[in-house]
Amino acid sequence: MTDLIKASKFFYHYLKKYKLSFLIIFITIVAATYLQVKAPQFIGEAIEELTKYVFALSQGVDDKSAFVNVLQKLLIFYVLTSAANFIYSILFTQVVGKSTNRMRIGLFNKLEKLTIRFFDSHKDGEILSRFTSDLDNIQNSLNQALLQVLTNAALIVGVLIMMFRQNVELAWATIASTPVAVLIAVVIIQKARKYVDIQQDEVGKLNGYMDEKISGQRVIITYGLQEETIDGFVKQNKKVREATFKGQVYSGLLFPLMQGMSLVNTAIVIFFGGWLALNGDVERAAGLGLIVMFVQYSQQYYQPLMQISSGYSMIQLAVTGARRLNEMFDEPDEINPKNGKQITGVHESVSLNHVDFGYDPEVPILKDVSINVNKGEMVALVGPTGSGKTTIMNLLNRFYDVTDGSVTFDGTDIREIELSSLRSHVGIVLQDSVLFSGTIKENISFGKPDASEEEIIAAAKQANIHDFITALEKGYDTEITEENNVFSTGQKQLISIARTILTNPSLLILDEATSNVDTVTEAKIQTAMDEAIRGRTSFVIAHRLKTILNADRIVVLRNGEVIEEGNHHELLKQHGFYSELYHNQFVLE
Image 1 (tube, rainbow, N blue to C red):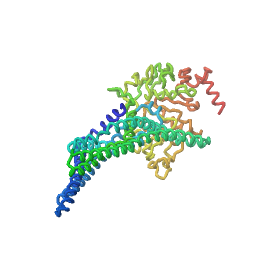
Image 2 (cartoon, rainbow, N blue to C red):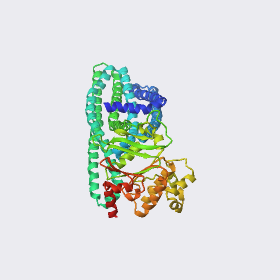
Image 3 (cartoon, rainbow, N blue to C red):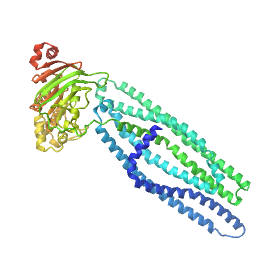
Image 4 (cartoon, helix red, strand yellow):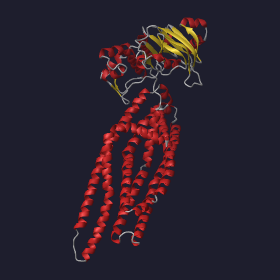
């Protein structure tokens, strides 16, 4: 029930904007319902008039005008019913299309505000399934199931009013089986809800598995792990199939059971109506018409229950989809300080002051780390894998907040600085560069969309990639797509460096930017990095020590602690951990 309440609030938030449309929809549904429940009365009258006509014909009187008049009214009612149905269906489809579009936009806006921690802890495919599977289920369910609920709820009310106006005894007989039908529905719905929830969660996991394996297909092929990967997919797909099967079985039971109850109810109405007619409680002349009328009402009464039952699985998918979307909306946004300070760059220093941090509070990564970098200095972070180098980068850009201590720019805690202001002065070149769909020009200017062509070319020249770009047929206007990626790994890295140079950051962070390339490309990247670093405060994370020999200061980390600090020559003289790393690396080379 909690999920249903939350889902109702979620849908109300997105549908309340269309109150006028819903008013028109409500009016046309009421009109259609009135016309629909009035029709059986005309059918009953038509039976009565036909009976009278046959009797009068046997008396030599051939007057069928009353019968024809009733048929004309019935025809007009059916035409008007169809028109009303058409109007509210079109309006409702339009409202659903607009509201789900707002959901999609709202979800993407939320996605852009989430923390790095969220993306680190959720697979891409699982996130994508919220935009595809869950939103599609919501749209389909709103279009079909919710409209069914509204129209059929109106129909139930209309049928009840008409039945009790015509004959109270037959009305009670018609609805006598309702408690049994409701009890059956409640039991089945509880079972179905459980498995539909599991189904959508398992679909998200399956999407995450496929996304991961597709991204890593080269590795899978390299190691010949195709069969193992298929086995993993089959196992996860089996979980989806089992949950889907159970959910659909329970959901599918509702419709035939409600249909069976409807047939039983019709038999009760016929039996009870006949009994009333035979016992003189209703006029025999009108009895046949009344029984036919209530048979129609009985079917109209159970029709909404059957329709709602048949659409229950879709309703539950919508509720589950709303729950999964709400899970994302409930995720905390990045904390941006109110009235945060605006900065104009690094004018004095960047400092980590007695920083403690762990992605898991129970597993510390950094322990009492203090590093001070003066303006214009290049500081290299060196250490074995897992020593905390990349974690420091995450803290400097405030992807994560420190557990204890502080990170400061010119003495100001970065938690007091407005996020966009902070990040506009921090540039990062990651180990794995990313290019987006679009032209080369658009990729370079990604961080500064209003950059002039001269600025873009100047950045590309500094990054040592201009010559390659101009050699392409369309130059800077060359389109980059999944199928048409003209760059090697090293060239992608140079594009990333050009993109960073263009934003002119005060603080530059290079995270193992040369680790994935050959020595020739490494030399080009190193030249570009030297251009980017010149005159800027910078942190360089490197495994290849020869790329940071000219650093103003080298900070050596091990197990999350600073164990050595100094320039290259000073550290070699200490004959410590850095010296050991350096000699081992150069002996290997």
